[in-house]
Image 1 (cartoon, one colour):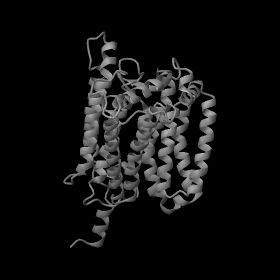
Image 2: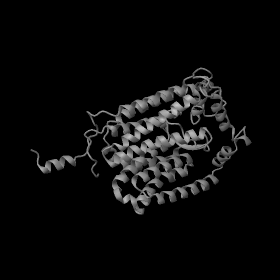
Image 3: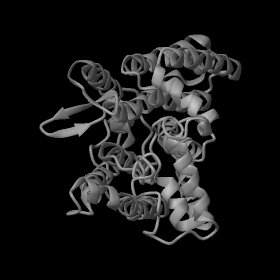
Image 4: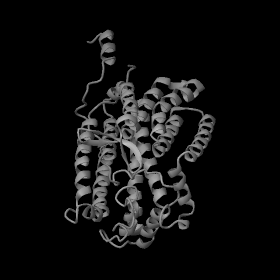
Length: 388
């Protein structure tokens, strides 16, 4: 019979790198794969006209091919990450956070500019956005801090200053990049995670008010962002310039009717609607699939998000619960913001629709994050995370 010392030593043992013999949550896996499949199909439909135009009408799958490669990378990452115990991520929180800050700062020096913004890094011919990685590491660090603080998260020192300083380490480089959409997105996710951690509501409300003031002041120093707000409120005043994109989006949504024009039969994607394969792909979905098809896709997102929260709530330890909830919240907030922009409920933010919009870094990272949620769903025989 093992001695008490042996049992204690076994309990304190560091987690193995890979977990075997435990099954993932198959409903969540199937939902993610379904989102990916439908997303790739709609990306092809939304992008083939632009692809033909870009290639002199020689290739209709330019964007689909690139997205498919990133999807394959993301699926490999999803499988790999699904086998890594949560305790490994717990110990990687601070190192990955430091790497993210370094990458964000490097954008200011070696970053490449596209569409008027410097947000990309090109390494060995591979272009990616460090902000996509920073979103993940912020969630990871917040989950670790939640586990570390425990009930102290209700105090101002930990619940506000602790989380706030960690958040500012990410937001300051993003502000220097003028990446307002990422700042808004990460701020919203951070508020949700702080609420789950136990930060008092009055402090969160005060922080939200201060953030709103910051956004207003920030926009006043960013001419193009101010133009977006003007175009949102009155797109009809400048239909040929600042209001053009949102008007074309609304035309696409309205022309879809109840059942749509049919898959592949969108008219607005023929170079009328800018970024029809990226931020505004949902407008093409509405045009081709109609209200019924669009609501079916929204329902698919909703079911996937709810299942993700179910996994988080049934995790065996607080770190895993908050970590999974944060990753699912990131997908949820991105989805809601994108749909609100496309339907002109919010001004243009540049936030993509997860699994649908063109963007290799975002797709690969999103799939990898869903792999982590799947790993957390391997709930059988999970040990409690020990302090690092």
